[in-house]
Length: 243
Image (cartoon, rainbow, N blue to C red; front, side):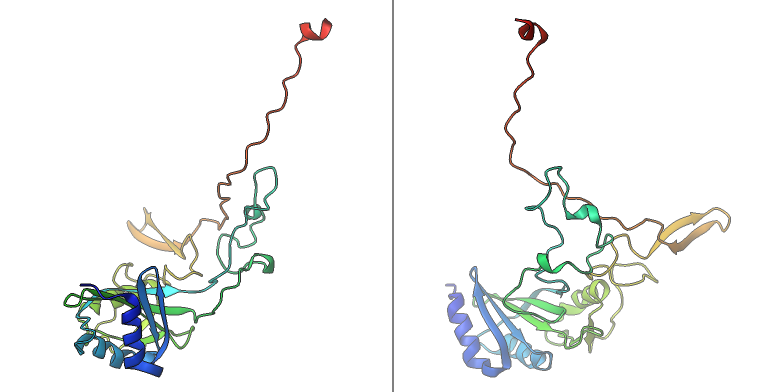
């Protein structure tokens, strides 16, 4: 029998107390937030203590909260010609900043980078989402949980590759998906949509070479669905006018 999310949340509050930064229950799911320095101790307890028994790490992913709560596009106030703010290309094809009138305030502000862990307890038929924020944005570092859940090995390498999050204690933290010599981390919000370099075949050198990307940054105008306008009356025909 599955325990209710509210009961699990209460158990977590009672067991870990001030060690938890935040506990939320939404859409039938429990999410807990913990500081990086408390991550390993809490992860071990969640795995080993019979009251929780989260034996399996289902998934681990990075999150970039840059520009969280800010809208890149506005379509409600678009002009009658069908264009929106995208025509002005203020962001030059990249999500760097938006004007104050488009900011939508959220009830809380997070650090930029976070790591999210999805846990499963087979014996108790429970799921839990665990989230930890990196203390620094410039050099995001969180402890590796590979000693707690061995399945974190490639997940942490993926988060490092795509988000640039470092996992302290990982035995072999190398890129996993991008090519050798790849510049930057492609899932970061400030990564250019066209990338930093492009690969071409050089007929003179007879090999593949890297060069700076030649695509100019641009803003694509999203499709805007507008209310139908009333049909204009047809102009009278010449014969009808003569009568």
